[in-house]
Image (cartoon, rainbow, N blue to C red; front, side, top):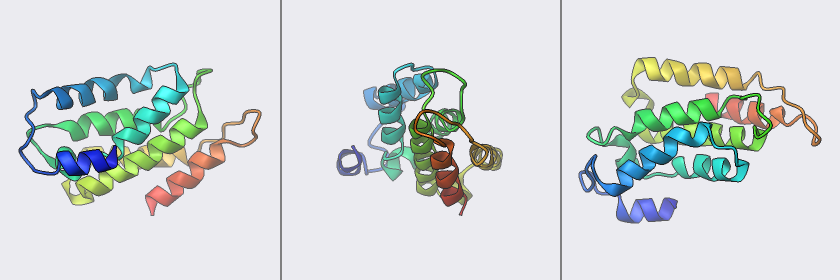
Amino acid sequence: MQSYCKNYFSEPGKLSKDSFLVREIIAIASPTTLESNITVTRGLNMALGVLSDSLLKDPTLGLSKYLLDALMLNCLPKGKESDDAENRKQAVKSLTKVVISLGITNVNKHMLKEVFETLYKAIQDYALDRRGDVGSWVREESMRSLT
């Protein structure tokens, strides 16, 4: 997906807000927090992190807010059976990639504050399951992201 986005959507202004791809990205990003299938959620979290810089930075598309909101929600435990630490870890990775692609100075200060608060909350993930302390995967990725 990363190569596809870089090859076909790297030119700024190539897409409009009404284009099929932009509408689909927004439609996919919003319900990732409600998806019960953990493999679908993991794939979506990973895909949102590899969108091209021009797709993310184009102010006429307005994708960055949708993506940041969805990824921040996916970084935190939801207390459901379908909740998975690997998904949260991937969401933290993608959140970091999106912020880096946008550039910290280009992110709205309020949104940047929310991103940092989300990463601080993710550091407090102490989830356990049959594999042991799976929250440590999220905590480690969050600490990497904060640096």
